[in-house]
Image (cartoon, rainbow, N blue to C red; front, side, top):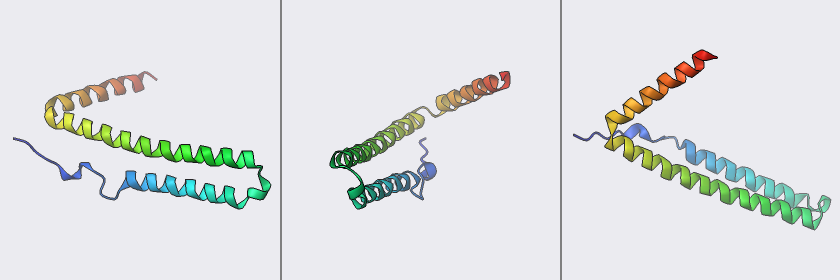
Length: 102
């Protein structure tokens, strides 16, 4: 018997919203750099724009890797549900022991 849960994904788009917000923030920073171009040297301006482009690319890569990781974990949990519960319970016990020692 295989059970599927529809609520394993965030319906309000939390991950997507975060990526969109970071993209908007980067675009606003680019606009700020372009609007204050008279205060910056050409070298500084190009370096900042290059770093923002790399940041945007890294953000998209992290988003893709995170989604791929979530899919893999979801498949493992669906394939081995009882073992997953056992591992989660063991992790909770170990975490509780570590936190009580402090």
